[in-house]
Length: 76
Image 1: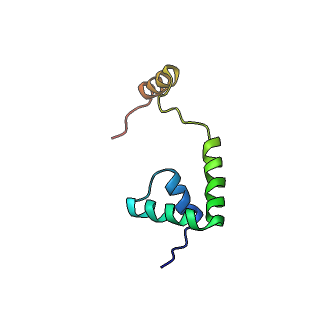
Image 2 (image 1 turned 30 degrees about the horizontal axis):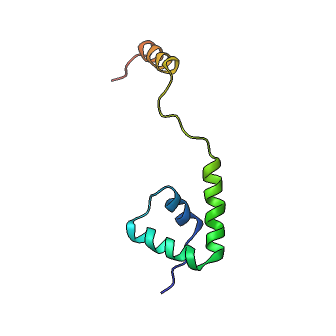
């Protein structure tokens, strides 16, 4: 049985959002299907170019939020 994977599947694979079974199937398909492998490499290259997200806000940002919060009335 041959499964056709989409670019969405590959992106989920890159972001490690696939099940173990899907991971194994995708890896097998990448070895057999050169066009799928090319699509994977293009997607992976784009992923690698994305800037890394900073999850910790700066002190200035936190202070601005706290100031706004203290000036905004609470609605019941």
